[in-house]
Image (cartoon, rainbow, N blue to C red; front, side, top):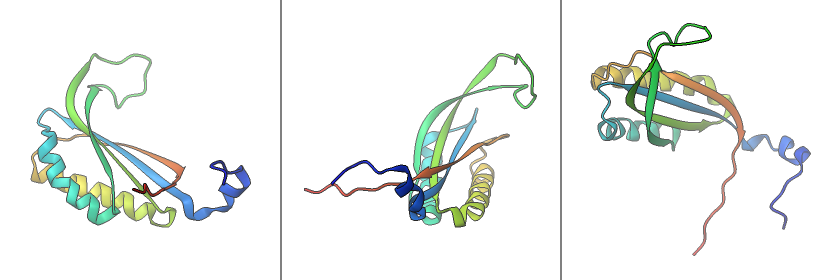
Length: 131
């Protein structure tokens, strides 16, 4: 059995298509383990699975502007959250992410001002690891 698929076969398999959201958050008050304990169970409930990892966020005060050069960046502790969802549930999932992070920001007093979200279309594959 070949591990490679030709493009036409991949394109025909819409059940493998997913929308991936990558969310980046950081703040001066960010405590990764506290945030993970808060958000982990909620991500599981909404998305069946997610990936979280600590990141060092670097943000310029004038980063919301479009220009050639920015102010020196400030380094903050943060988190990258990645979830993949079926395309039919993408809008609802994005709204769930927004609500969850907004509530977490209030509940944990994180001081988040901006949330960076990237959306991609990906092909999901799974395999079972046998004993």
